[in-house]
Image (cartoon, rainbow, N blue to C red; front, side, top):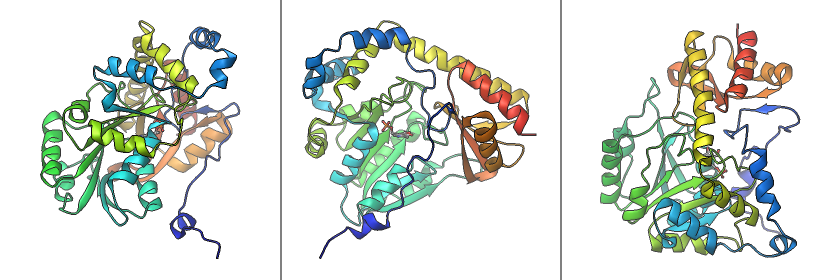
Length: 352
Ligand SMILES: Cc1ncc(COP(=O)(O)O)c(C=O)c1O
């Protein structure tokens, strides 16, 4: 009999239905401006036919990245976007029916992977005022929990944990021998990191990406940080040559170009300040400034705004249903000021 895994048959996935065309996409938390064109040109100048012909070699870039992070290569595994690393961690460190604890709303792939592999994803909801009570996370850390997933900061809520809060959660997880995954896709927009846990403790992973601040989502490059034995297990799952050669070449250039990171952070920060000032002075409640995205409580219907933004203004944003006291609200990616101006002038016209 032809076989198909019933879990896959039943799995509901949304594939991107939007074509970029001339839309301004503020729905994927990309960096809309991207890297400077001269920078792109200079990296491409070094690409030879052999570079394209050869399988990618990861050692050199892993060393560059390790130096950048102040660690060594035994703590790192490169992946084809951090979503791939998350998948491998779930595959290797949980079992069929295994219990995974994570906050909701959050990055949806945690739930998708859990369903794909038949894991039991236990949701810890946010409070009505959109705060997260860490006791609600801790109380779900039962003896049979295999993986705890935290985000720093969380997408889409933008919430973060203080050092004390994180330590409390970590101690509880460690006591019950629960692996912990900290998703830091939005690190650099928000500087506090818990990477020291992944570097100094066992059974803690941090995943990061070059898709967001580094403006390289099209290249697909992320990495898993963890203790050497754990990293080896993740490496075992990687498809051969999973890390794109162009991605590593661009990432190395970004890391090693003096001032590039600061330039990216500066462009983003100016856009964020502009947007927040505008929202404040136009009577909007908002939340989640720690990442490159923000939740906005609209004055009128969220879905209508999303639809009109698309059809009339060529801007793509997302709506979320029933987000605590915000109700149905908008999530908008934050980019340089010129993109935020485009968004605010559209919102002013539509949301009234
Ligand atoms: C919280 C979070 N983690 C991980 C990812 C995956 O990023 P990538 O696979 O591009 O590294 C995203 C993408 O939006 C995200 O929001």
